[in-house]
Length: 106
Image (cartoon, rainbow, N blue to C red):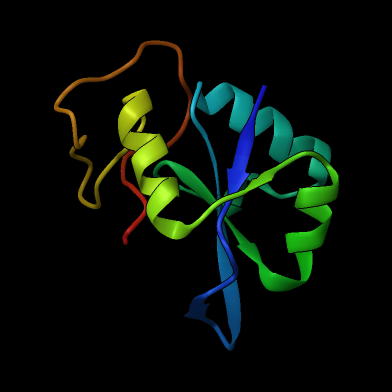
């Protein structure tokens, strides 16, 4: 199981944010986030938004540090990329993978 995180470089709500993603399944991502204590409401389309003060916690728990471009590449390669508005970047879908429609907005 590998979960990835990009640097906290996305501003919002007065703080900086990272994206936490899986290149295998949403279930894997949800399990990792739950173990880390990240609430499900932090899930947005195909990733979790993680505030900068939780970055080190995610890395200590096993998240692999990658660039923001790599996050998008990993999601696309796994067929897990979901765009804003509910469309999938690859036009397809995977059964049994929980989550809302959408995608990393970068």
